[in-house]
Image (cartoon, rainbow, N blue to C red; front, side, top):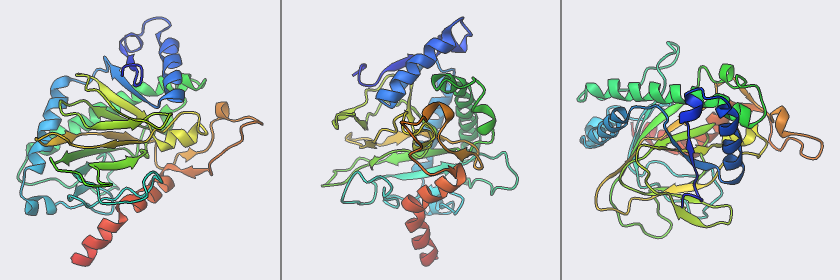
Length: 316
């Protein structure tokens, strides 16, 4: 399984060891071109903060439904998404599309006064502080990863930094209750992420599966104190299909609740996504239409979540 989903040690490059950036970038390039998923170790995010965020997710979802609905999801994709309220439509991977067997709480960055503030549960005063600290730590890690991705694509190390310094990122605190899955039912159905890349902290309850290039579904092992990282559709499009955005899905097959706290890292909303100069030539012209990150995300969210907002507005 370690061969199927490789592990990348970030210790040498983050310590500034000579030659580590190029060596790490070369390995990242190989993984992104052949697998699209990896584990990262020695990432620098405090383990205590990861544990505290899992605990915050559990405490939020343990609230009565009425309390969670008081901060229900809004048009800015902030707040609570009730159980079975999302349907994975933007994938083309499954013919029968049933609602996902999960509920979630979405957190967006709070650095822009022009954007609506996140919605916070009144009964859990520490929830905001913990989740925003975790958001900041994952954003900082993402910015440290960008030079490695740039060099993996034979670009200057600082290429992506100014294009991602006001990232359109989000944190999702997901609860997968223990259920008996029927035909074509999933915790979250097969899909690819919309992101540049996604960072997923490991927890003791397994459930993530990825689809190999051979079309086989394999379970990701739980490796403590690591993150799973996967390429998303934005980077796949930016690299003209060179870096794989690999389909994955999740279940909860245990008798206990399963929580996931994925962080979806995106470039700035106005950043134009068009084939990078190192990913096109006469034999490999651009495969995707150029569009901004904001335009792509509006389409993606409309595909997967718009029906919930319409239903919620009708009910109100």
